[in-house]
Image (cartoon, rainbow, N blue to C red; front, side, top):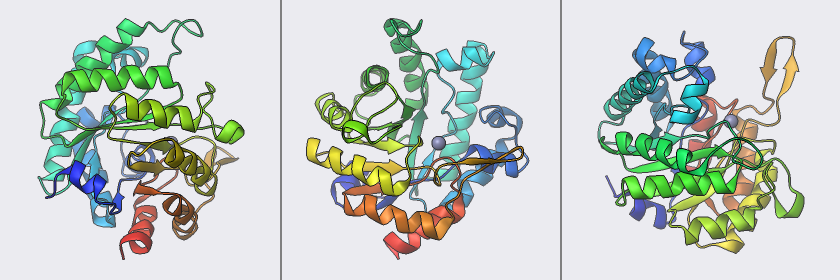
Length: 293
Ligand SMILES: [Zn+2]
């Protein structure tokens, strides 16, 4: 398998995965994604396998909510979250089997940094650094930081990853809520500022995932990032803007429509393509057909 950095710079399209939480629930897993690592490892493995079968080039470990800050909010002790991290990495390594890229996933703290909230920069750094160090013990090709709405927090996580394992590339993905000012996050960080900072601080790729924008709208974010940096660009939108139907959250874009809207992101320069909430293995299969067929 080609080295990930070489692949990123080749300009070829690499497919990531889609939503994990709802797929694992559908397969009989827990509502809390991270619980599955210890309680239902076979379900986490099955979800990874479905994405590989659909055409994904990479496994993203089921470790999104297992940073120390967020894990504590969920009522996990540090020992419990470490056990869950180890389990997730073992499952992911086995699924990747050295034949697919393995991306170690880090998600947001779920708190706001001071002065907007009570989050402390040093505490964040320590929590993310220990998560990154643990995950780097495995055969990981890169870190992926996802769904962060605050550039300051994203840069702390990036620094923690770089310090924990300087040899590993870090892919950085923020979540956008509006197209104002060329696209910005809830905390008001613009696409251009995020891309420039990511490059300056040593990220290997930058992009966007989740949030309130459709794939078509996200193309504008990608275009703004393309102007602001030379890094490879990644995009993993939700399957459109969700609405409620009774008790259920429904994402409107089916696989074909999703893939066809993703063309705009590709045309704007994104080459790492995947999905977030509401996307399924069928959505990834539709991407594979359109962009790798
Ligand atoms: Zn999402």
